[in-house]
Image (cartoon, rainbow, N blue to C red; front, side, top):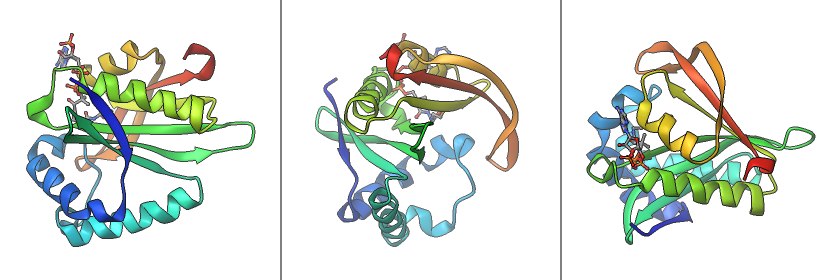
Length: 173
Ligand SMILES: CC(C)(COP(=O)(O)OP(=O)(O)OC[C@H]1O[C@@H](n2cnc3c(N)ncnc32)[C@H](O)[C@@H]1OP(=O)(O)O)[C@@H](O)C(=O)NCCC(=O)NCCS
């Protein structure tokens, strides 16, 4: 599939709410706690307003993933730290019905290109649940190296869960 990224805007609130609502059950095992408003256009507007502010401060960037021109998911680069670190953390998802077609692999390739070539980052990191083989495959295929297991790393789906940490630096891109 032809996979493109475009920066999310406040005007995408309704579209994003529809996408998240359709994937609510699929994404539940990977989600942090969210207010019930998250799955509404109004809630997404709040999220996207926050994104505008964070993007302005160069702390967070988020992109819509489009596959053959259809909205297919999202990818974010968060916790951006400059100075000697020049690092950011990836978060991503792809709609269940489009899984297994290389969409996430291509989207992570594009966000690496953006991070290392446009945003001037030196390092991108990601954390997966220990049993999220699909996500680990996507990262390995994009040249991410496994750092190791971080016990109780994130509060996901109602509990502090172990994650495997991955990172890639510009030298490996
Ligand atoms: C993880 C996720 C992004 C993968 O998206 P995707 O578009 O299906 O990924 P790709 O098609 O590029 O690659 C996934 C690969 O992993 C493989 N895979 C997926 N689940 C697997 C499993 N349980 N065991 C073995 N391989 C698996 C797929 O078959 C595919 O490999 P292939 O191309 O050889 O068939 C998607 O499933 C998703 O959004 N999951 C829920 C949210 C999430 O996990 N986000 C990441 C948090 S770290």
